[in-house]
Image 1 (cartoon, rainbow, N blue to C red):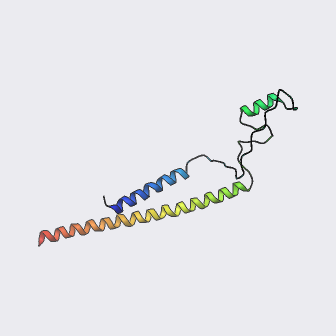
Image 2 (image 1 turned 90 degrees about the horizontal axis):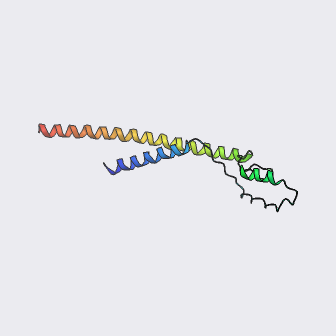
Image 3 (image 1 turned 120 degrees about the vertical axis):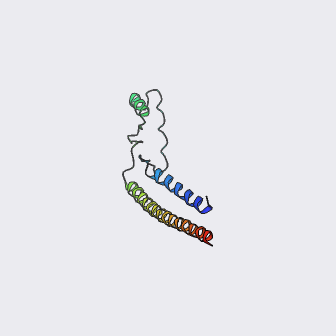
Length: 127
C-alpha cells in the first residue's frame, strides 16, 4: 500500500469519524455564562424556606431559586448555536464531497496505472 493510499485512507477514516460524531443523536446544552453557585443551605427551618420543597428540588436536580437548571437555553443562544452547527455541517458536507471527488480521481488513476502496467507487460512479452 503506497503512502498516497494510506493518506487517503486516513483522511477517509477521519471524515467518517467526524460525520459520526456530528450526526450522533442527542444535544448538549452549554450556557455562555458562568454557572450559578448552589443556594446556601437553610439552618434548621429558619429563614422562612420550605425544607421539604428544598429537599425535593435538590433531589430531582432542580434549584430552589425557581430556575430550572436542566432546561436548555431558549434565547438567542439557541439561534447562535444552530447557526454555528449549520456552518459546521456545511463545511463538513463540502469536505465530504471533496473526499469523494478525490477518491474517485484516485481510483481512476489507479485503474489507468494498472492498465498501463498490463500494456507494458504485454509489450515486453512481444518484444
